[in-house]
Image (tube, rainbow, N blue to C red; front, side, top):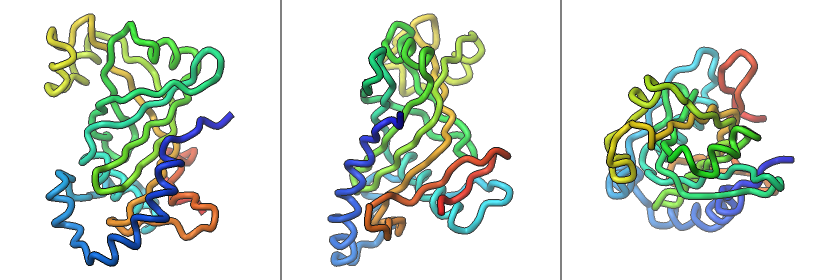
Length: 208
C-alpha cells in the first residue's frame, strides 16, 4: 500500500490556512527566506523539464536546503510506518539522490533492506512542506562512507566516517510541494499538493 505522508496532513493545513496569511501580510519572500535561514532557490536543469516542473523542483530545493531536519518514514515488519527525525544532506543535482547518515544498528537499516519504500518530509519554519517518496538503500563501502560524510554529523558520530557511520541513499520518485511563500499551492478541492514524478527516462515531470 501507499506510505502515509506526514506531509499530507501538514500540507493540508498549510495550504488552507497559511496562504491567506502570507498574502495579507504582503510578505517579501526574499526577506523571509533570509530571516528563516532559507537558501535562495535555484534549479538544476533537467533535459525536457517543463516550466511548471522547473518551478516545483526549484521551490522544493529552496525548502529542503533551508530545512535541516526532516521526518523519515520506513515500513516496519508488520507493515506499519516507523517515523523518526533525521538530518539529511542537501539533495544532489536534479533531485536524483538524498543522503541520510545513520548508525548501522538502527531499525531503519534493516527496514529499508526488507522494503525500500520510504517517505521523507520537510516542514520549514516558514510553513512550507516538501514530501518525498522514493527508495532507500544502504551504501556499505568504505569509499561511500568517506565521500558521503558531512562535518555537521560529527556531533552524532564523533569518530567520523568509520564503522559506526552508515550512509543511506534515498532515490526520489515523487516530490510534493506546498509553499505559500514560494507561490506553489494546490488549487484542487481535495488539497492534493503540486508534485513532480520521475519518468522512465530519468527526468522529472509535473503531475497533471
